[in-house]
Image 1 (cartoon, rainbow, N blue to C red):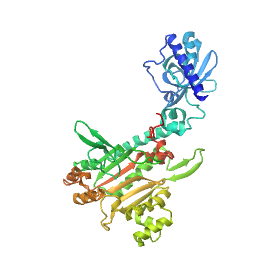
Image 2: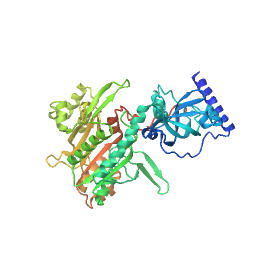
Image 3: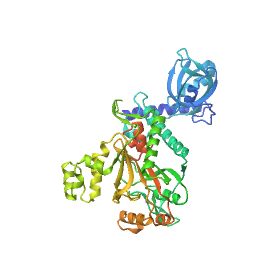
Length: 486
């Protein structure tokens, strides 16, 4: 029955499209010069001013000899008043073939209705696009998550909350660029297809270049190319980039995601932590209205509040592990695994000892941390591209910023010793020298200045700042399993 109802509605709309053409009106119109968007016209409303606006019909009240309708786009809405006396009977008759969802352009003067509603009195209108499918119910929006993610255009039309999240995302990315450029950083671009995927430990996507006859990989990180630019003499650089990792999909992971990476010559991880702290607080205050971020459930109830008030807490990795499991570092490897089983922490048989400790960190520290926490001085095995700590060469000078139960940003004092870097990369690759980026190591031998570097997962940052609980809610077109029969 539901399919039949939809088919009936489609048939009615196609009949109206044919009626428009029979009346000499093209249902899919041409260029229309606008003076303002609907939202701009409403925001800058001055009675008597002539405007030309265009948008989608999202509300319609038929009063017989006149119509009231809302024209909308992502800037907002503007009410339009249309009557047969102003536009003429022939044009007025055309309106009988229009529906919610159609696009029209309107020219007319601004006026206030008797109820004080800013409106445009239409002197003329043109049909710009006929919608052949009905829009979702405006009162219920798009509730089905499959439709929300697969047909994002319907989600944006029907759900103001989703539109607001993506408008904030756009503003966040724009403000990040402004923030860094104001501090002397320049934006650069590095290859998205690489001969050797480097800068992180992750499974890459593979492709093939026919003309060169070589396999290439979609990048998992831009780090090694950005460091080449430090060698080349750029002291402050950043890239807002797309990375690709052929791994699992979850509430926090998408195979294609956006990262910010930035590097500053002659800085260290502590300076970069300060930069990130200042940046995130600036974004929250500028775009989200303050340093307190409420996360709400589907009913609008606050389920947690993130407090970004500075200064942010800084704790050493080992101290956090000891606080989670007292006496941890006094245990041998076998005892640590036994302790994990007691705590029902799932440890794989192939995990090395440092990986067991990292699993404890992720489950008992990271996932339980809501307010900002810089985790510093991590084991060198976790971060092969970071500089060793002077006082303890088993550690590296890094931070991991945890907010809302997940890592938002790592930052390093970057390793610039080419010999140590070679040894670290060879160890990470398991001795497979073909997996080591020799050109990067060659570049380091020309001298890379000491530097601090950061990465920020933009999708996770937007989740935290907007209260979204799934990465799919902040990516316009997230990857999903194909539908059966599609």
